[in-house]
Length: 321
Image: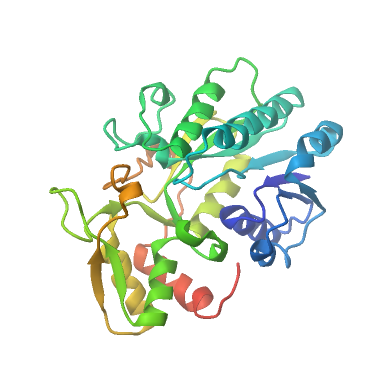
């Protein structure tokens, strides 16, 4: 069986769909399934069993001999969360328990890290295993992810094959439940649908013009393709970036959304909220040399291709992957 934690959430539910497309239905879904707005993310998926997040460690301890692979994608992902005890419990301690069980039972593991660990990018965006102890994330969420990366890299006992995947700015279907933390594509679609225009964050950095803040946006269909590839990649253990390797502006993203919606462009700017202004990343761009060197050769969706697919096939239809 394959375990997928966070399976009622955005990326993990898309991964389950991808595994289904590959013919895999021997999947154990793990999450807090109580949130009604996340039900549609998994209700049409084929799976073997559904296990509540709070019961999973006990379940795993009993059924480890049946598990062949673990994708640990469940986490508290709100970058505005400042309850460090909650983040430690969900993003560090819980992950450590899964790591130990995988190590003890010789089960390969892929877990979710984050580009938030890179902070302002002062040290670049290279997925070196030597870098985490030198990084300064901008928020408690990034701290929690970096703390687990450091811990994992220091362990003498580890899963037989493991990767800590540093996700950059992922967008795509199944993020309807994410509210403020949803991608700017979804916010653009919703704002344009209701008002005819889109308000982007104004730049508060003199090095960047309004809307020219740059991020490495990656479509979730590329993400799940890479995660599937990593399940069979056994030559490397450690951290690995997952972006496209090409930074694009929020203005590019908004314009692509207007084109995909087939409506006239109408973009204005508002101040970045004060609670995130001093923690705001103005540039991210994944160094993708490691993934390519491991043999992943598929091209990534361009921003325009990904946004077009997302808007036309999913957002306009209210559809799920």
